[in-house]
Amino acid sequence: MARAVELAAVVGAGRVDAALGLAAIAGRFADGDLASIIDHLAAERETVGVVIPGEAHSAQPGTAGWARLGTKEAGR
Image (cartoon, rainbow, N blue to C red; front, side):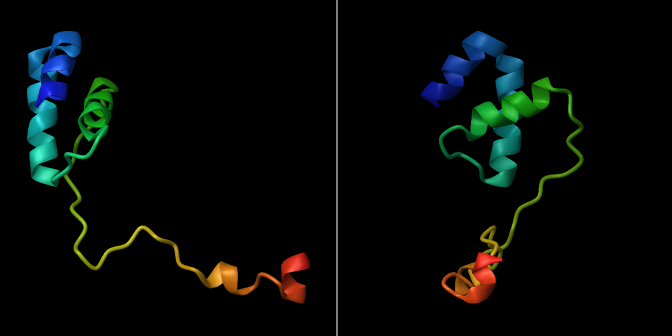
């Protein structure tokens, strides 16, 4: 909340309030999340919906690429 107060002094309480609402819906309260949401709103990007990935979702693309290291194909 201290960061929200600091941001409100810079960008205004209305923007921070809107960003806090979106952060609450998305469950995004890590370092930098609130500032990122404020930047998104400042860029006047349309907020169509909030995507909340399930527990099974992973942003990790996988490790299949590592399997080729050390093979002849990796040198091509």
